[in-house]
Amino acid sequence: WEDSIVKMLCATLMEQREQWVVNAFTSPHFYWNYIENAVYSPEIIIYDWDYNAGALADDSERYLLEILSNSHAMVFVFSAQDNIAEITEIVSKTEFLKFKKSVY
Image 1: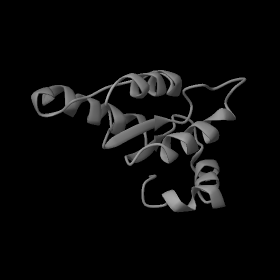
Image 2: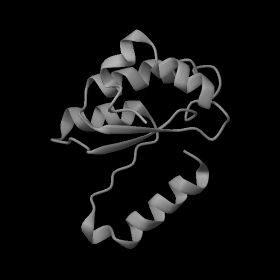
Image 3: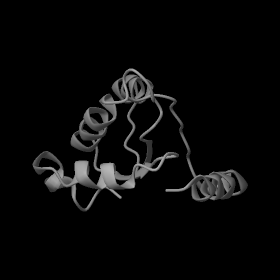
Image 4: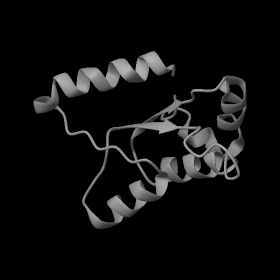
């Protein structure tokens, strides 16, 4: 997803906040800590592929697989950088195939 799409989605959710329950986490670790302590099963997850750009950037693939493995949510991968080819290749790997209908 591009920045403008995510911005528009967030603006819409904020304008209609009485209709939605929105939670945001700045890292997969915060998400996992939250779901361990609360009954929480999101319908949609927007996963920021680049949230941890730098030394641990390779963990994005592992974190995405873990999120997909532990939820029934549709997961939309957001990347501010031009990583579409890389992400498409990764989600085409064997370990991601069973999640083919859940990741966008």
